[in-house]
Every structure is written in C-alpha cells, then in structure tokens.
Length: 287
Image 1: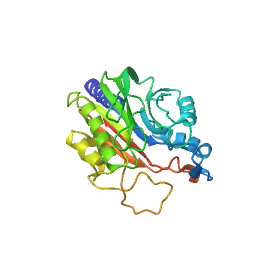
Image 2: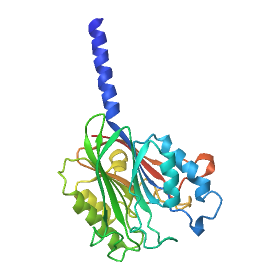
Image 3: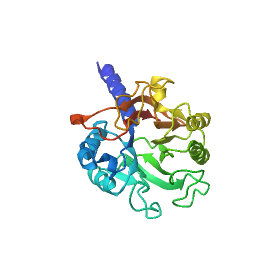
C-alpha cells in the first residue's frame, strides 16, 4: 500500500507538472474602433467590448496577442486585464495620422504577470528600413510592424519569444515582403529556440506568407491539429453567408521546440453579439 501511494503521488506530480508546462494562447483581431461602417447596433465598440473581453477570458489565456488596438480599446483592455502586462502600444511615431482609418492599429501583447518574467522586448517595422518608426515600403497601404517579447516561464524556467504582427490588407507584393522581414529577423535564433508568431496575415495557406513561414521552419498550430486544409474563414467581416470552406487569415505559427496540443477557431457569440469582425484563434502549446 505504501508503495502504491508513493507511485500515485509520483504520477500526480508528473500530471501536475505537465499541466503547468502548457500555455493557453490566443490571437485576437479586435477590430479598430470608431469606423463609420460600425455605427450599427452590435458593431460599435461600446456594444461589443464586454463581449470581446468575455470571449477572450473564457479560454483562460496565459498570452493574448491583439491586433488593431487603438487608444480607446487599449485603455479598456489594459484596465480589464490588470493581471497581465501589456506591451506594444507605442506612439506618437506610430501615428502619422491621428484620426480615421489611417491611424495605425497596434499589435499589443498581453502576458500573465504571475506566470512570466519579461526578459526583453522590441518592435521593428515591416519595411526596407525596419528600425525607422512608421516606415512603409512595397506599396503597403499603411505602415505595418511586429512587436515581440522574450519571456521566462516562472514555473518551468523555459525561455521563449512571442511575436505579434498584422500584414498589409491590400497589396500582395507587400504581404510577401513583410513576411520576409519577419522570417529574416526570427532566423537569427537557433532552430530549436521556441518562438510563437501571432497575427492577422491577410492571406491564407495558398499565399506567399504561408509558404515563406513554413519553408523557414514555422508550423501552423491550427493545422497541427486539424490537417492541411481550409476549415473556414476567420475574417468574417460581419457576413455569415460565406461558404463553409473559406480562407483562414489569422494564424498562430510556431517555430522550434513547440508542440501544439489543441487549437480552435473561436466562434463564440454571447447574447447574439460578435466580439469582432474576425474570429479569434486559440491554441494550447507545450515546450
């Protein structure tokens, strides 16, 4: 009996250690606020901000990477997600325009204060001059950037990088070139070093960015679980009469010693209100 108890305690310790080593992560394009097209009940930020928060918190994420964050939504999320550290909301060099859709939506990384220690952080621009804030190239409709943090897991000691980006939404050439900047920057790390790239890539698995990332050793967390097919769109644009098999444009890519345990396109709609014009993407990862 004593030996059995010792064995059970050992097994329980292994299970608990495994649970502690997993990371719940989300990529969330929360949609830029204040657009004339959203002056409709259910689409205004004030109508959906609590729903947006509820859907995010329902997955109990350790790390949340948001896109299209501007002043109003940042203030709300930073206040409501007080147990997280937020990185990536910078200005004024990021805002050559101060109003309208030309305003640059930030790619903000939220990570648990209690779970992770911040080692370093940074930002670079997806252009021919990546160190120049607000710069753009290749006919990109607006300046695009990539924020990153290097974290240490307080539970396991694992060190890894998180990157958050948003590629151009119009120009095909710009999307490919912007992806090349990210591939080149992340390639400076050893192939086995864990990196996780979140974002709205405005492109699917048949487009240049996907090919560039996969050729460079990145793998799509959703594909790891569900296979290499299109399983429906993530950018719904408030239109729900699209074919079931559409194009995913929101991804969680992994590189290095990262294993995907689960992944989901989050289609929650509490009270009939959608949190954004994009479905969020969730993954459970293990190093």
